[in-house]
Image 1 (cartoon, rainbow, N blue to C red):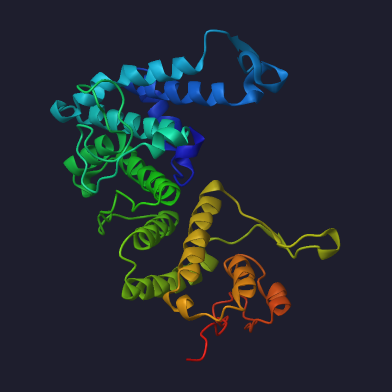
Image 2 (image 1 turned 45 degrees about the vertical axis):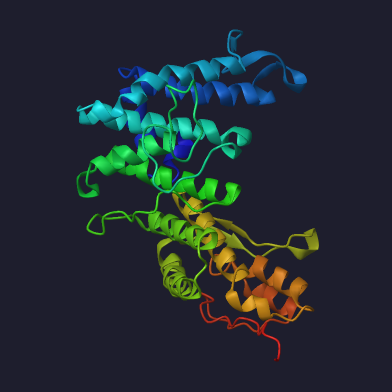
Length: 343
């Protein structure tokens, strides 16, 4: 369950979800479905080289575990997910929200299923919105809509730790689907502003907003707002996330990028999302439509390197591309190249 807790210092999925799964069948089956699909897809879990033989995990042979097993575990969850709207037990609803979220990960493991998913901004729990539906016409279940329905039912100011964790994983999942399927994120409601949000999740939310802009109307004024927020977050990153080790690239060994180590998955995951958001904002700069046709290679290299500062030693590379650079440690005053052509 480590993937789900990448930005959760309290590890709700590793601790709370696993404990609750002992007494909650749908939650347990959702975990089994994802685990079965994971084990069956990777050759390293096979008893014979090249992916042959039976599944082996922790030296235990699992001869009855097949790709069909994963699908069967998933189908066992469907009746409970159908009844979520009539469930009054808050803890059980939280369990179902976690189960639906885990089954969304089940979808991520199969791009073909995700590609077949319809898109909707306002889904419901009956399979009308975005996500893959399973079963016959009377048993369609939409995993993201189940999660959204449960989140809407409880004001975010009253969310438990687990429900909050579910929300933030759902945001990350929507970023993934937005970028891979080319559609706007389906979770667009900002979390309650009165509720404390970790800095890591602020970076995740920023990436979600960038994805929404990229896949939406692409209004230039919104792009400018995001660029201002990016600058603020970049400065805060240098204060919040300090590398435990970094060294310049060894060019004699053919290295291009410096080595930078951080202390936790939380920092790395948050920074990955933030760097990706910055790459998108610069690559989708509205002024690029006026760029000189002779600049693409230079700009492409600039994109690649520019976004590793202030997390990496960008100034070591700027001179290679004839780019102006301010030598401040944070790199916040690095100038952008003039890419507009004369009209």
